[in-house]
Length: 377
Image: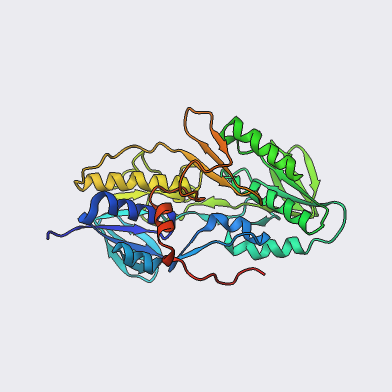
C-alpha cells in the first residue's frame, strides 16, 4: 500500500472530532490521522449551564477510546507553534511532529468581559455559580443580573442561565429577581424576529426582566454600571467570557489571536494548513457552527487528496437547543429565511451540538462515556 497522507488534527473538542469523523467517511483510508489534544477527555460543555441548578452535568467521553475506535493516533500534548516551511508543529514539551496536512481546531481562550462580574466559562465555574446563588440571603428583592458583554457574540447560554436561575429561585422560595442585561436590541435576534419574540415570552413567563440596548461597563460597589444609563443595583452579576484566539506562533494571528480562513477553511497564505471552530476570526463561537466549519474543511482536505467529494463552501445554518429548566426550545436560522422556533427538535439526534457526524456518533457509542466525576451536591 502506498504511503498515506498524514493529517494532523490539533484539538480535542467538537470541531476536531467532527473533522476526524468526516475525513474517515469521505476519504476512507487515504489518510493516516493523528489527533493532538491537551486532554484525555472530550467534555460536552454546552449543558454546563444546567449544572449549577442540579439539572444536568456535562458528559465526558474518552479520547483514547474514540481514537481506538476510529483508528487514530492520539498524542497528548499542548501545541505551541507551527513551522509551515518544514511542515512541523512544535509541542510545549519540545517535541516536533511532522504533517502533510494540518487542521487546527484549538478553540478559544476565555477572558474577562465585564469586570467585577462572575464569569461563567463552563464546567469549571459550575461550583462557583452554585455557591454564589446559595449564598444569597433572604430578602426582597435578590437581584441577579445576567450580563452580555459587548465582545461576546454568542449570548444564548446567558438566557439559559437566567431562565434556570429564576425557576431555581422559585423552587427555593427566594424572592429572586433575575435580569438579562444585553447590548442586543432584541433577545437572540441572530435567530430572527420570531425567535426574539418567543424568547421574550419565555423570559416574561419565568419572571425574568429584560434590558436591551445596554452596554455594560463593570460591576462595582453592588451596582452594574451601564454606559450612558447609570447603574443597576445587583446582589450578583454573572457574565459569559470574552473569547480570545490561541495566538499560536507561526500562524498569521490577528490582534486577538484568531486566524482568518477562507470559505473552505484554509488559513490565508499557508499551504496545507486549515482551521475551524472558535479559533477562527468568525464572530459567532458556537459548537454547531464549529462542526459545520469542520465538515467544510474536511471535504476540502479530502478533495485535495483525490477523494471523489464536493468541496462546498461554508454556508452556515445556526441551530440551538435553548435550555429553560422545563421543556427545551429549538431555534434554527439560515441565511435568507425567517428562522424557526419549535418545541420539537427539527434535527436528530437532538443534541446541543448539532454536528452532522459527531451527534449520531456519540449517540451510537455510549461505551465511550466516562463515569461522572465530582458531581455537584
